[in-house]
Length: 109
Image 1: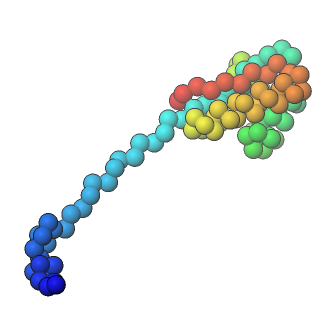
Image 2: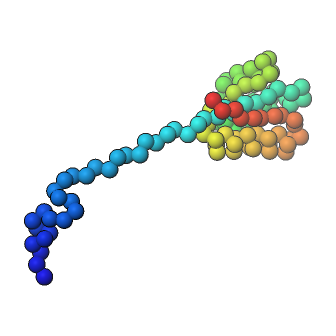
Image 3: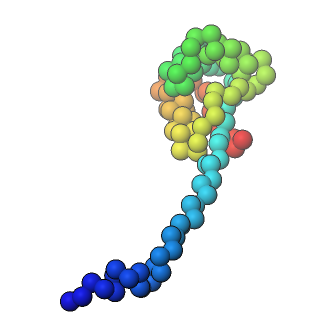
């Protein structure tokens, strides 16, 4: 068999370089995780939740807790949908485990 058809540039490529268009990636939407105030959950418990679930230092956790207490709600962080959903479930689960009515939601940014 002869290799001439491959060596002379014949065939589909015709010697042109073909660059495929790169797909444009869209950033996923982000969601705020929000704690809502209630009259029963102890402030110290809220600080502990913010530290353990959101990895915040004590001063930041205390600031957010005071925002929840004075303004009715406070943002704990901004995450992709799956992470925000997981954080909300963790907060609600921990609150239920300790028999506190702490509410946590997520809002699209």
